[in-house]
Structure formats: C-alpha cells, structure tokens
Image 1 (cartoon, rainbow, N blue to C red):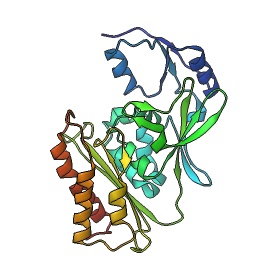
Image 2: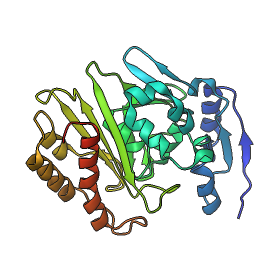
Image 3: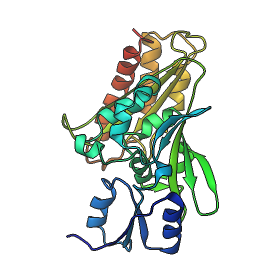
Length: 287
C-alpha cells in the first residue's frame, strides 16, 4: 500500500535543518533505498519527506589535511569509481563493489547506509576498521562522533532532532595500510550480507610493528571491532598456530542471533574464521 507524503527539496543544508526542526513529522530523504520500503510497510507518523539531494554541502569526496572527507550524499557508485578510495581505503571500495545492484548503487548514499544502522550494513565494517568519524550538523552546532559511538544499536544512531549527517571522515595514516572486505550471502548476486568482515593491516611488511584490525558485521547488533582477535594477530609473525588460535577466539566471542533470516549462528561461526584467514592470505601477511 502506497502512503501519501508531503515533499520539500531544500537548496542548502541550513534550509534542510530548519525544515526538520520546524516539523516533528519530517524525515530526511537521500537515496531512499532503505527509507521508502520502510515507510511503505509502516504506519508511522512521518509525513514530510525532506529531500536533501540538492544540498551542495553534503556532496563530494576530497582529501583534507588529516583525513579523507566523504560527503553524506556520496553514492555507493561514486565510492566504487573513486581511485583514491580504491588505493587507500580498499575495504570500503570492496564493500561498494558488492553493494546491491548497479541501480541501487546509483541511488544509495553512504550517509543513508550508516544512518539506517543495519547490523549487516555493507559499509559498516570498513568504517569501523578505519576508525571513521561522523560529522553531524544541527541548527546551532556541528559535532564529530567516532562511528563506534554513533552506532548505538540495530536501527539506532546518535542523531538528535533536526540533525543531519553531513560527512564521514576517514583518518589518514603515515604508515602503509592494506585492507580487504569480504562477506557471505545466500545467493550470488544482489543480496544482503549474512556475515561481513573487514581486515585492515597497518605496516604490513613489518611484523614487529604491524597492527591488524578486525571488524565484523551481522554477528552482533552493530558492526564492531574484535579486540581479542586483533591482540592475537598484531605485532608478531603469523604462523598456523597463531591463526588457529585467533580463529578459535573469534568464533567463541561472537553472538549471532538465533532469529537471523540469512544464516544461522553455527553457519556464521563456521564461516567467520575462514573469511579471516582468507583475507590475511590475500594481503600476504600469512601464507
């Protein structure tokens, strides 16, 4: 059943925020790939769609002094086509390549993907592993929140009334960084992830100083960094016994939902260690 909504299209960010502040029943509309299906299914009170796609402040990928700035309206297709992201933030590029289909990638935005806060969100584990920050703009102030604090629970983020996610900030690294993202899904092609993992390796050629980050999705209520696996894998040469121990502890530490529609807990536990080992081999830090 299609519901009737009022629609406005502000010309800039401040106008959009003012509209949201004045109307309690307003909801932000960016790509709409998550929002519109949800509105059609729910009988909630949101009746004013505030289309932010014309706001220039929310667009563009650019290098700044300490970070890479990704505007909240950046589409998944734009991430997929960005050479700098492919070279410096490979895991995010990997995630964009398996995100939905071409039509969805041309509509879906990175800001919308994180605001929706799905436990299996494709961009979730890369952003957690890269220690991304979320810039939030409101009527009176602009604040920056680490993504681990922004994502509060499944479907719930730290976003107040009248606030809009304006940018995602990815920190630059002085040392060499390699990263990969992988997932499993029910079918080959367009499907949501049953399990996702990002591995980021900082200083890959120097075992003594090498830092390995491991972020997981669809095994807890939000994406998260697995500190136990990271501690086992970092600052040492990796051999079969260390990999086996890291996989054992990783499997023991996750808590997949029994009610998951895409894969049961035992399948996720069986696969998570295999994905970790595969990515470490792809990056050449374990043979």
